[in-house]
Length: 233
Length: 240
Image 1 (cartoon, rainbow over the protein chains, first blue to last red):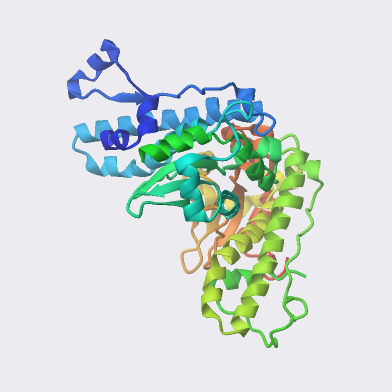
Image 2 (tube, each protein chain N blue to C red):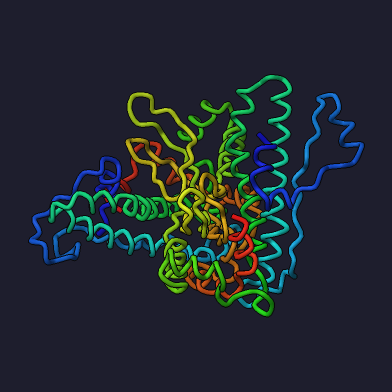
């Protein structure tokens, strides 16, 4: 199960490092099974680099505490599953599925999120160009319409969750989807750009005024990353 | 005047609202129906400090709860209009909005009343002799219950609530349940008390340290209200 998850998610794969150390391999030798361990990826910008749109304090907590908790939860779920598998205890393995989805999804989603953001002084903000712009114009009418629809989708999330610009691999079109909690984007959809609508993503700065956060975040969207995901999709 | 009992029943059975409206007066009060209002807190915003900060309480009550009330009224108005117009598709489309905002109104209304300032008579376990006895019988001890309830709260994935409920029907046993987002406890079970696990309930003070929030919330549980609800003496369900 873990290897399937790792294979299908490039961003997660990038964030993974083989535990590598002979010691770790040795410790697992009895099960003849060497696991990769998910690790917290580094951000490519400083915690304060997205200010004033996202505060340094939010970024630091979000990355070092929230994302780290998902990484730990994912590793713990994978370990429980591996142990259950080695004992042939598939009931036990199946009961861990919700934790794998939640923490694995949390790790995948945040890894994608950090990469599709950038400081406004660097790649962040503006509008997409080239093939991505063309596709957005075709499928949403205009960039402005797309942005409005994305903000409406974000505002409509009841509880914690995410909104994503996705490419539908079967239809070949762009679309918007929302996901509850940390459910990752899957099925025919390739995630191109995600916005975190959990309260921990904005509350310290914007409190209950989440519409202001949804407006501000467009100043730090990294369209270069989104375009590159689009080209690979 | 808020009749929360009607809303409860409405959410439980999704019965269409009775209305003899002509179709042009899209206002609940004008139609002789209840417009829900934000209930006043039975204590000051800073009364739960240091366990819940005044800033959290003020935002939580005056902004978050207020938004649920406003959006509930709006959705109910649209629903009444859809019933009057025999537009069943619109009625169905509104159900989730009514559930979310109606649930938000019910949940927060229950929550404020099952909290009280730490150290007050209401927060003493002495105020809930019957309930505590039933809890000890069910979980084998009060600490065991506290542990199980706290674990349920911390196990929530995303936004939601943890509740102690008394089951409806013949059993009347106690049970810990969690509900996601703003789903309310409906369908006959009696809520004894609830704890809000949305991040807006603790984040400004506790940040990602939700275990500390869960630990501290026990200091401000209103056991007097909990006992009244347990004994079925609470009038909240018919009149709030």
